[in-house]
Length: 209
Image (cartoon, rainbow, N blue to C red):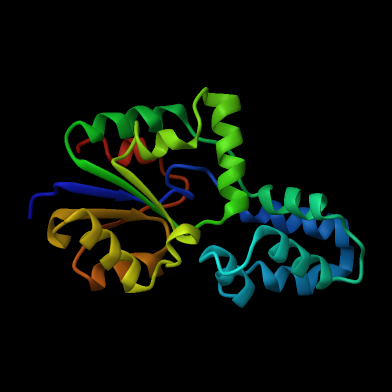
């Protein structure tokens, strides 16, 4: 069926990520004492999920990480380690989004948290000259963030929410994400999908759209 709508993930699709950088930062600061903290920043951990759906605040999240280790670390040090996984955005991706927005309805759907979104906002202002609201206006018709929605991929209710909110037909909507579980969740509600391979350039992937 013809694609009329596009939904993009952010991490490792629009924004380059390397979670190993966060692990390395924690290992550097905590040494052998970092294993408990490492378990907490696994995407399947309860605290990770709670942070991504907005059940806990940044301070609660970071204090829980601090309490997981016997090594005293400041909240700022932990925050910097948490943000270390965030890298950069190829400016050509903004051109791509703007181009696609002229032809399709374009949306962003991201599992994220208040700390990472604040970092992205600062990065965009410093490096690209606009703030994060541009992701919600200039480069998409709307951006959806898990911690604001209280919903999280790959649960089907997050896809159903966006489809209903925007009046989209699932079969006419293409969802692009780097996570296989998120792709399966999207497929279960009838979305067309692309499993984006980390390292591939999304601009090239979307060149024919």
